[in-house]
Image 1 (tube, rainbow over the protein chains, first blue to last red):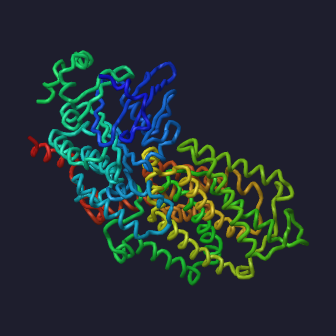
Image 2: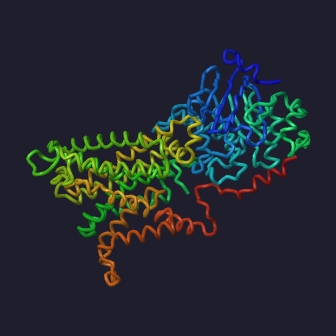
Image 3: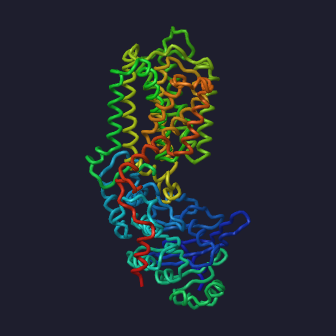
Length: 267
Length: 368
């Protein structure tokens, strides 16, 4: 089953949160994305798989607005966002994390989680603290607890361990009360126990939250996602449920050399 | 390492009683009492110049420490304010260049600060999309342009400059009053910068310092924040410029050329570009070195005369860059934390940070 066929009749459908239409990104002569169509429904839990260089992160950056596509359209909640800068995404309820953690390393955990909320609210130019501020602080501390950083709210983010920084990174996306969360390799560099907690956290998210996930860890990806899209060389090549993807011969062929049998990665 | 605006989790009383504030309060008290026992030259020249340079350097530190922007345009803003005072306040019949509008000196102050702030807003908006070395180069360009603008537009000044600028009656022939006013103003500027750093705006500014890309993806207008911070710093630099021109009685384009521009950066570097207190500390060291170098015993024997001042300051800056990139304030901070917590590098205000692998290891142990 291919995502391309359904995408063309995109925007009007009420259940659709995100639709990409023939998105092309070219860096000079290199075509990082060669015409990607993708449709994401509200409440979807979608994982993007694919080898390094398949274009997953480029696709992410296009959706998040960090890159403008060379051709094609990005429609979020029925609004054409193709040329809209990244800073307008949070108003549409979009939140993302980065493959390499991007924290405010000189600020405390609480301030990081606080800042994540103020950007969307329009309060960030204020020179006075207000009641809304106390609410943000409250929510920041609650989120610190959710991502297991309750004891470290006063710690400077740059001093956290790698695993704790990943937790904070996810917390900063979730604290904005987003409708659409994009996670770029959230499990990279985590220990097995931390990955387990991550899967639990992602599974416990509100059912209405739409999740788009890039993940190299098959176990995390296939347990979190309800739908999987496989990318290779800038195109989507397969799509289906985790069970279908596990046994898809094409996917095996793409990953051949590293792991022939995907179900082995499940351990 | 970098200053954090918001001190989360401690009451206002505890915040006011911190060691940092105690030192600042003691230094302020000492500065206010100085006219009682200091020599005229020391109070009216050395310390007055220290306060003026300190306020101007603090605007560099504010932008660098909280906004991650190293600006070379701060002396230009002091100069713009000075030229505006010169044009507005000098009387019609005076024998000087400039527009000679002959306004009330306090009206001239309001006018000068308004013009300086507006210039800072426009220049800040132009520079706000750049960072790092490019921001430094753009602001250096501003400084050079400012020099030529005031030099070439002869109705405003010309290279000869404006002379005979009198301070308002309050300070005329009362240099000690001017010094005391500068001490009070220094404290106000210092407190204002620290207060701004703790506001939602200030915290967002620090977020932009740490990661502008993330800030944009969180919905912040990064260049607007940078522009507003730059404008605020320009306003305070203008305040320093007003007192500078009252104190000097004259201003010409050479006084805002590359030399003084770099001197101000050197002041900030000596003090430490990451702490506001360092600005005044750096200014003090700079002015004292400038005035008392020749009095040191034996220095003339090794060929260090006033003509060698730049060499000495250059060596001083080099030493500080090598020994403590955070300047004198960084050295003091290290000594302080070394004394208060022997054997433990972490600060008192922070919860003890666990060794970096411990939680990961513990979590791994708990996993399946």
